[in-house]
Length: 374
Figure 1 (cartoon, rainbow, N blue to C red):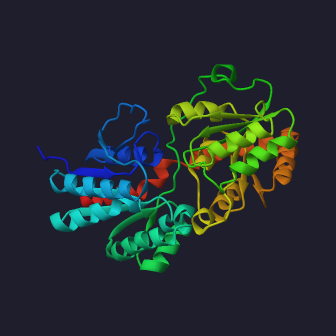
Figure 2 (figure 1 turned 45 degrees about the vertical axis):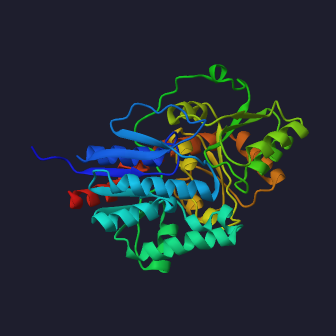
Figure 3 (figure 1 turned 120 degrees about the vertical axis):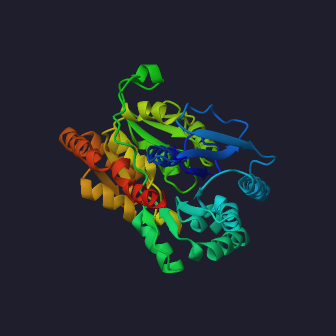
Protein backbone atom coordinates (compact mmCIF):
# COMPACT_ATOMS: atom_id res chain seq x y z
CA UNK A 1 0.00 0.00 0.00
CA UNK A 2 1.37 3.41 -1.01
CA UNK A 3 1.60 5.83 1.91
CA UNK A 4 -0.11 9.17 1.28
CA UNK A 5 2.05 12.28 1.33
CA UNK A 6 1.57 14.58 4.30
CA UNK A 7 1.00 18.34 4.15
CA UNK A 8 1.47 20.57 7.19
CA UNK A 9 -0.71 23.69 7.02
CA UNK A 10 0.53 26.62 9.13
CA UNK A 11 -1.46 29.63 10.34
CA UNK A 12 -0.76 32.23 13.05
CA UNK A 13 -4.34 32.32 14.39
CA UNK A 14 -6.10 29.97 16.81
CA UNK A 15 -7.88 27.95 14.07
CA UNK A 16 -11.31 28.86 15.42
CA UNK A 17 -12.90 30.74 12.52
CA UNK A 18 -10.54 30.65 9.52
CA UNK A 19 -12.89 29.49 6.78
CA UNK A 20 -10.30 29.76 3.99
CA UNK A 21 -7.92 27.45 5.82
CA UNK A 22 -10.72 24.97 6.57
CA UNK A 23 -11.60 24.81 2.89
CA UNK A 24 -7.95 24.37 1.92
CA UNK A 25 -7.50 21.50 4.38
CA UNK A 26 -10.68 19.86 3.13
CA UNK A 27 -9.54 20.15 -0.51
CA UNK A 28 -6.12 18.72 0.36
CA UNK A 29 -7.67 15.84 2.31
CA UNK A 30 -9.97 14.98 -0.60
CA UNK A 31 -6.94 14.96 -2.93
CA UNK A 32 -5.55 11.91 -1.08
CA UNK A 33 -3.00 13.72 1.05
CA UNK A 34 -2.75 13.52 4.82
CA UNK A 35 -3.30 16.95 6.40
CA UNK A 36 -2.23 18.38 9.73
CA UNK A 37 -3.21 21.95 10.63
CA UNK A 38 -1.05 23.99 13.01
CA UNK A 39 -1.97 27.20 14.81
CA UNK A 40 -1.70 28.72 18.27
CA UNK A 41 -3.85 28.66 21.37
CA UNK A 42 -5.27 31.75 23.04
CA UNK A 43 -6.86 32.28 26.43
CA UNK A 44 -10.28 32.83 24.86
CA UNK A 45 -9.98 30.26 22.04
CA UNK A 46 -13.19 28.45 21.16
CA UNK A 47 -13.33 24.67 21.06
CA UNK A 48 -12.50 23.26 17.64
CA UNK A 49 -15.00 21.21 15.62
CA UNK A 50 -14.36 17.60 14.67
CA UNK A 51 -12.49 17.63 11.37
CA UNK A 52 -11.34 14.91 9.00
CA UNK A 53 -7.77 16.07 9.61
CA UNK A 54 -5.54 16.41 12.66
CA UNK A 55 -4.99 19.85 14.19
CA UNK A 56 -2.58 21.20 16.78
CA UNK A 57 -2.63 24.47 18.71
CA UNK A 58 0.61 25.50 20.39
CA UNK A 59 0.70 27.47 23.62
CA UNK A 60 2.90 30.56 23.29
CA UNK A 61 4.08 32.77 26.12
CA UNK A 62 3.03 35.95 24.31
CA UNK A 63 -0.25 36.59 22.48
CA UNK A 64 0.52 39.93 20.80
CA UNK A 65 3.36 42.14 19.66
CA UNK A 66 6.87 41.41 18.36
CA UNK A 67 7.54 38.79 21.03
CA UNK A 68 4.49 36.84 19.87
CA UNK A 69 5.84 36.68 16.31
CA UNK A 70 9.28 35.71 17.57
CA UNK A 71 7.86 32.89 19.71
CA UNK A 72 5.60 31.71 16.87
CA UNK A 73 8.53 31.62 14.43
CA UNK A 74 10.76 29.86 16.97
CA UNK A 75 8.08 27.27 17.79
CA UNK A 76 7.17 26.52 14.18
CA UNK A 77 10.83 26.34 13.11
CA UNK A 78 11.86 23.73 15.67
CA UNK A 79 8.62 21.76 15.39
CA UNK A 80 9.05 21.61 11.62
CA UNK A 81 12.65 20.50 11.93
CA UNK A 82 11.63 17.35 13.76
CA UNK A 83 8.21 16.57 12.25
CA UNK A 84 7.37 14.14 9.50
CA UNK A 85 5.86 15.75 6.38
CA UNK A 86 6.35 16.15 2.64
CA UNK A 87 4.93 19.62 1.93
CA UNK A 88 4.55 22.81 3.98
CA UNK A 89 1.57 25.06 3.25
CA UNK A 90 2.30 28.46 4.86
CA UNK A 91 -0.56 30.93 5.22
CA UNK A 92 0.44 34.61 5.27
CA UNK A 93 3.79 36.25 5.82
CA UNK A 94 3.87 35.66 9.58
CA UNK A 95 4.32 31.89 9.01
CA UNK A 96 6.52 32.10 5.92
CA UNK A 97 9.96 32.53 7.47
CA UNK A 98 10.08 29.26 9.49
CA UNK A 99 8.38 27.39 6.66
CA UNK A 100 10.90 28.66 4.10
CA UNK A 101 13.96 27.97 6.25
CA UNK A 102 12.89 24.41 7.05
CA UNK A 103 11.85 23.71 3.45
CA UNK A 104 15.41 24.59 2.39
CA UNK A 105 17.11 22.72 5.21
CA UNK A 106 15.05 19.58 4.66
CA UNK A 107 14.51 19.96 0.90
CA UNK A 108 10.73 19.96 1.17
CA UNK A 109 8.13 21.53 -1.11
CA UNK A 110 6.75 24.87 0.09
CA UNK A 111 3.40 26.36 -0.92
CA UNK A 112 2.72 29.96 0.14
CA UNK A 113 -0.80 31.40 0.44
CA UNK A 114 -0.95 35.15 1.09
CA UNK A 115 -4.45 36.19 2.19
CA UNK A 116 -3.85 39.91 1.72
CA UNK A 117 -1.18 42.40 0.73
CA UNK A 118 0.41 41.82 4.12
CA UNK A 119 2.87 44.71 4.26
CA UNK A 120 0.10 47.12 3.26
CA UNK A 121 -2.12 46.54 6.29
CA UNK A 122 -2.72 49.75 8.29
CA UNK A 123 -1.21 48.26 11.45
CA UNK A 124 2.14 48.11 9.61
CA UNK A 125 1.79 51.25 7.51
CA UNK A 126 1.51 53.24 10.74
CA UNK A 127 4.66 51.54 12.12
CA UNK A 128 7.29 51.97 9.39
CA UNK A 129 10.13 50.25 11.28
CA UNK A 130 8.10 47.12 11.92
CA UNK A 131 6.82 47.23 8.34
CA UNK A 132 10.41 47.42 7.07
CA UNK A 133 11.25 44.20 8.93
CA UNK A 134 8.31 42.32 7.40
CA UNK A 135 9.06 43.80 3.98
CA UNK A 136 12.67 42.64 4.17
CA UNK A 137 11.52 39.10 5.00
CA UNK A 138 9.04 39.15 2.13
CA UNK A 139 11.52 40.68 -0.33
CA UNK A 140 14.12 38.03 0.50
CA UNK A 141 11.83 34.99 0.26
CA UNK A 142 9.09 35.82 -2.25
CA UNK A 143 11.24 35.92 -5.42
CA UNK A 144 12.54 32.43 -4.55
CA UNK A 145 9.07 30.86 -4.24
CA UNK A 146 7.73 28.46 -6.84
CA UNK A 147 4.15 27.90 -5.67
CA UNK A 148 2.16 30.95 -4.52
CA UNK A 149 -1.57 31.59 -4.10
CA UNK A 150 -3.44 34.76 -3.20
CA UNK A 151 -7.01 35.94 -2.83
CA UNK A 152 -7.70 38.10 -5.90
CA UNK A 153 -6.26 39.26 -9.19
CA UNK A 154 -5.38 42.79 -8.04
CA UNK A 155 -3.14 41.50 -5.27
CA UNK A 156 -1.69 38.84 -7.59
CA UNK A 157 -0.81 41.52 -10.13
CA UNK A 158 0.83 43.68 -7.47
CA UNK A 159 3.03 40.84 -6.22
CA UNK A 160 3.90 39.87 -9.79
CA UNK A 161 5.06 43.41 -10.54
CA UNK A 162 7.15 43.52 -7.36
CA UNK A 163 8.76 40.09 -7.36
CA UNK A 164 8.33 38.67 -10.88
CA UNK A 165 6.44 35.70 -9.43
CA UNK A 166 2.90 35.07 -10.73
CA UNK A 167 0.61 33.97 -7.86
CA UNK A 168 -2.40 31.80 -8.66
CA UNK A 169 -5.74 33.21 -7.53
CA UNK A 170 -8.14 31.50 -5.11
CA UNK A 171 -10.80 33.87 -3.84
CA UNK A 172 -12.38 33.43 -0.40
CA UNK A 173 -15.63 31.89 -1.58
CA UNK A 174 -17.77 29.44 0.45
CA UNK A 175 -18.30 25.84 -0.58
CA UNK A 176 -21.42 25.05 -2.60
CA UNK A 177 -23.11 23.37 0.38
CA UNK A 178 -26.46 24.97 1.16
CA UNK A 179 -26.73 26.39 4.69
CA UNK A 180 -30.27 25.91 5.95
CA UNK A 181 -32.14 28.42 8.09
CA UNK A 182 -32.45 26.69 11.47
CA UNK A 183 -32.76 29.51 14.01
CA UNK A 184 -35.29 32.33 13.68
CA UNK A 185 -34.83 35.93 14.81
CA UNK A 186 -36.37 35.41 18.22
CA UNK A 187 -34.09 32.43 18.94
CA UNK A 188 -31.03 34.49 17.99
CA UNK A 189 -32.07 37.50 20.07
CA UNK A 190 -32.74 39.69 17.01
CA UNK A 191 -35.57 42.21 16.54
CA UNK A 192 -38.44 40.43 14.80
CA UNK A 193 -40.14 43.34 13.01
CA UNK A 194 -37.26 45.49 11.82
CA UNK A 195 -35.24 45.74 8.64
CA UNK A 196 -32.02 44.02 9.71
CA UNK A 197 -28.62 45.13 8.42
CA UNK A 198 -25.59 42.96 9.17
CA UNK A 199 -21.88 43.69 9.36
CA UNK A 200 -19.89 40.54 10.06
CA UNK A 201 -16.29 39.38 10.16
CA UNK A 202 -13.20 38.63 12.22
CA UNK A 203 -11.51 41.84 11.08
CA UNK A 204 -13.99 44.54 12.08
CA UNK A 205 -11.21 47.05 12.46
CA UNK A 206 -10.67 50.80 12.24
CA UNK A 207 -11.29 52.30 8.78
CA UNK A 208 -13.36 49.39 7.54
CA UNK A 209 -16.62 51.35 7.58
CA UNK A 210 -17.98 50.09 10.90
CA UNK A 211 -17.78 53.52 12.52
CA UNK A 212 -19.86 55.08 9.73
CA UNK A 213 -22.31 52.16 9.78
CA UNK A 214 -23.05 52.82 13.45
CA UNK A 215 -23.38 56.59 12.89
CA UNK A 216 -25.72 55.82 9.97
CA UNK A 217 -28.24 54.31 12.37
CA UNK A 218 -29.03 57.77 13.82
CA UNK A 219 -30.84 58.51 10.55
CA UNK A 220 -32.73 55.22 10.15
CA UNK A 221 -36.05 54.18 11.64
CA UNK A 222 -37.49 50.67 11.82
CA UNK A 223 -33.98 49.31 11.20
CA UNK A 224 -31.36 47.56 13.32
CA UNK A 225 -27.67 47.02 12.69
CA UNK A 226 -26.33 43.61 13.72
CA UNK A 227 -22.55 43.47 14.23
CA UNK A 228 -21.26 39.89 14.50
CA UNK A 229 -17.54 39.29 14.95
CA UNK A 230 -14.40 40.74 16.42
CA UNK A 231 -11.88 43.47 15.74
CA UNK A 232 -10.05 46.42 17.22
CA UNK A 233 -12.84 48.92 16.55
CA UNK A 234 -15.53 47.05 18.54
CA UNK A 235 -14.85 48.87 21.87
CA UNK A 236 -15.01 52.21 20.04
CA UNK A 237 -18.32 51.23 18.43
CA UNK A 238 -19.78 50.13 21.75
CA UNK A 239 -18.84 53.48 23.28
CA UNK A 240 -20.44 55.36 20.35
CA UNK A 241 -23.64 53.34 20.72
CA UNK A 242 -23.79 54.23 24.41
CA UNK A 243 -23.05 57.93 23.85
CA UNK A 244 -25.56 58.26 21.00
CA UNK A 245 -28.18 56.13 22.82
CA UNK A 246 -28.42 53.67 19.93
CA UNK A 247 -28.75 50.52 22.05
CA UNK A 248 -32.09 49.64 20.45
CA UNK A 249 -30.66 50.11 16.95
CA UNK A 250 -27.21 48.49 17.15
CA UNK A 251 -26.63 45.00 18.57
CA UNK A 252 -23.26 43.31 19.10
CA UNK A 253 -22.57 39.58 18.97
CA UNK A 254 -19.13 37.97 19.46
CA UNK A 255 -17.43 35.92 16.75
CA UNK A 256 -18.80 32.42 16.32
CA UNK A 257 -18.29 29.35 14.12
CA UNK A 258 -19.30 29.72 10.48
CA UNK A 259 -22.53 27.73 10.61
CA UNK A 260 -23.72 29.72 13.63
CA UNK A 261 -22.73 32.98 11.96
CA UNK A 262 -24.68 31.93 8.86
CA UNK A 263 -27.89 31.83 10.92
CA UNK A 264 -27.52 35.54 11.65
CA UNK A 265 -26.78 36.32 8.00
CA UNK A 266 -29.77 34.32 6.75
CA UNK A 267 -32.09 36.25 9.06
CA UNK A 268 -30.96 39.68 7.81
CA UNK A 269 -32.16 41.86 4.93
CA UNK A 270 -28.97 43.64 3.88
CA UNK A 271 -25.24 42.95 4.20
CA UNK A 272 -22.59 45.67 4.59
CA UNK A 273 -19.05 45.59 3.19
CA UNK A 274 -17.73 49.12 3.68
CA UNK A 275 -13.93 48.92 3.75
CA UNK A 276 -12.45 52.34 2.95
CA UNK A 277 -9.49 52.84 0.56
CA UNK A 278 -7.27 54.31 3.28
CA UNK A 279 -4.39 51.96 2.48
CA UNK A 280 -3.36 49.69 -0.36
CA UNK A 281 -4.44 46.54 1.44
CA UNK A 282 -8.01 47.80 1.84
CA UNK A 283 -8.02 49.25 -1.70
CA UNK A 284 -7.38 45.77 -3.11
CA UNK A 285 -9.42 43.78 -0.60
CA UNK A 286 -12.16 41.28 -1.42
CA UNK A 287 -13.72 40.38 1.97
CA UNK A 288 -15.12 36.93 2.72
CA UNK A 289 -18.33 38.50 3.98
CA UNK A 290 -19.27 39.65 0.49
CA UNK A 291 -19.59 36.05 -0.65
CA UNK A 292 -21.28 35.02 2.60
CA UNK A 293 -24.00 37.60 1.94
CA UNK A 294 -24.46 36.34 -1.61
CA UNK A 295 -24.70 32.76 -0.38
CA UNK A 296 -27.35 33.84 2.14
CA UNK A 297 -29.21 35.55 -0.75
CA UNK A 298 -29.32 38.98 0.85
CA UNK A 299 -28.53 42.18 -1.09
CA UNK A 300 -25.21 43.92 -0.50
CA UNK A 301 -24.29 47.55 0.15
CA UNK A 302 -20.56 47.77 -0.58
CA UNK A 303 -17.87 50.40 -0.87
CA UNK A 304 -16.42 51.25 -4.26
CA UNK A 305 -13.29 49.08 -4.15
CA UNK A 306 -12.07 47.56 -7.39
CA UNK A 307 -12.44 43.86 -6.54
CA UNK A 308 -15.64 44.30 -4.54
CA UNK A 309 -17.39 46.46 -7.13
CA UNK A 310 -16.36 44.04 -9.88
CA UNK A 311 -18.29 41.25 -8.15
CA UNK A 312 -21.29 43.37 -7.12
CA UNK A 313 -21.69 44.92 -10.59
CA UNK A 314 -20.99 41.75 -12.57
CA UNK A 315 -23.64 39.74 -10.74
CA UNK A 316 -25.93 42.70 -9.89
CA UNK A 317 -26.35 41.63 -6.27
CA UNK A 318 -26.58 45.03 -4.59
CA UNK A 319 -25.56 48.67 -4.45
CA UNK A 320 -22.19 50.41 -4.52
CA UNK A 321 -21.65 53.26 -2.05
CA UNK A 322 -19.51 56.00 -3.57
CA UNK A 323 -18.53 57.25 -0.11
CA UNK A 324 -18.99 56.26 3.53
CA UNK A 325 -20.66 59.38 4.90
CA UNK A 326 -23.32 58.23 7.42
CA UNK A 327 -26.05 60.43 5.89
CA UNK A 328 -25.32 59.08 2.42
CA UNK A 329 -25.27 55.47 3.62
CA UNK A 330 -28.57 55.97 5.42
CA UNK A 331 -30.14 57.30 2.23
CA UNK A 332 -28.88 54.27 0.27
CA UNK A 333 -30.40 51.96 2.87
CA UNK A 334 -33.72 53.82 2.94
CA UNK A 335 -33.98 53.77 -0.85
CA UNK A 336 -33.37 50.04 -1.03
CA UNK A 337 -35.57 49.24 1.98
CA UNK A 338 -38.49 51.05 0.36
CA UNK A 339 -37.98 49.40 -3.04
CA UNK A 340 -39.25 45.84 -2.60
CA UNK A 341 -39.10 44.98 -6.34
CA UNK A 342 -35.41 45.93 -6.46
CA UNK A 343 -34.70 43.91 -3.33
CA UNK A 344 -36.30 40.88 -4.98
CA UNK A 345 -34.16 41.35 -8.09
CA UNK A 346 -30.97 41.45 -6.03
CA UNK A 347 -32.03 38.37 -4.07
CA UNK A 348 -32.78 36.48 -7.27
CA UNK A 349 -29.39 37.50 -8.67
CA UNK A 350 -27.69 36.29 -5.48
CA UNK A 351 -29.36 32.92 -5.97
CA UNK A 352 -27.93 32.70 -9.50
CA UNK A 353 -24.51 34.08 -8.56
CA UNK A 354 -23.88 31.59 -5.77
CA UNK A 355 -24.09 28.75 -8.29
CA UNK A 356 -20.97 30.15 -9.98
CA UNK A 357 -19.24 31.60 -6.92
CA UNK A 358 -18.20 28.38 -5.18
CA UNK A 359 -15.04 27.14 -3.53
CA UNK A 360 -15.19 24.09 -5.78
CA UNK A 361 -14.54 26.38 -8.77
CA UNK A 362 -11.89 28.44 -6.97
CA UNK A 363 -9.97 25.40 -5.70
CA UNK A 364 -9.29 23.97 -9.15
CA UNK A 365 -5.90 25.72 -9.27
CA UNK A 366 -4.92 24.11 -5.95
CA UNK A 367 -6.18 20.69 -7.01
CA UNK A 368 -4.18 20.88 -10.25
CA UNK A 369 -1.03 21.73 -8.28
CA UNK A 370 -1.60 18.90 -5.81
CA UNK A 371 -1.96 16.48 -8.70
CA UNK A 372 1.49 17.55 -9.92
CA UNK A 373 3.01 17.11 -6.46
CA UNK A 374 1.77 13.57 -5.80
